[in-house]
Image (spheres, rainbow, N blue to C red):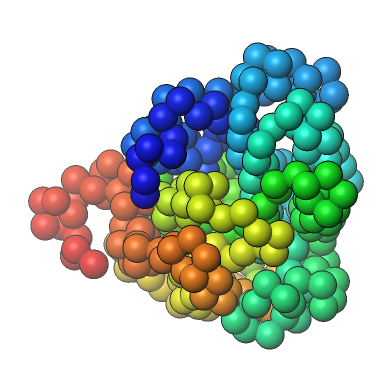
Length: 325
């Protein structure tokens, strides 16, 4: 990465205090960015025009990286479809409007793999984005995010506004959300296995059948991709960020159980939803346009995540009480 690009450049990172945002801010600093503004939700409500206007005035950014989002796993999406649609849509739409009017030079929107149609052929290619309706449990969130691609392309066509759109696959890593009411699949499974191991429970319960597949991107790799795109990519087309590697939920559970040392039974709950049947991205465009290739293998990333979440397991592994997968 060319360090001369970032020093002196004023960058606003919405959601910069969150899971992905902290990794992006860290990566920006490593690249030489020294004028980073993170509007905190307690000070700036980005769902309102007033909050957005004040953030843009205080940060005076040349570039906006829009990472802020209202997110959750399948359960949270089922319980909050209206909230997830409205808050993600209104925040992104108003922010892009006001950023353009404020003279922001570049706007980077972080979309979601949930925007893809439910039965998209694997691997998901960017041109497949409009070939159907998203999986029902997260469609409101996915469509709200998809609309920001439309807005960015429309603003580029009418106003020459440099808006780009990135589609990261499911993220994971140290510092993820482990709250069982709203967590995504990896932190939810890690918590189940760690808690069961700690309590001596003989089983864990897992939603669905385990047949669905997913792709997972380590959070630091996602941050690398976002910063590379912010620096090097100025195109209208959306770009996937992922690893291109697919794993079934059943195999994921086995892997997490192995790394945590949980040896009990996994009890599946088939009436609960599996979500989208398969999910894996074609990542060729990111490699070709701004040189992004994910560096972290799933097993290694899971071990780092588990050890950060449970220091007791990390200590046990260091003392030889667990294998070093």
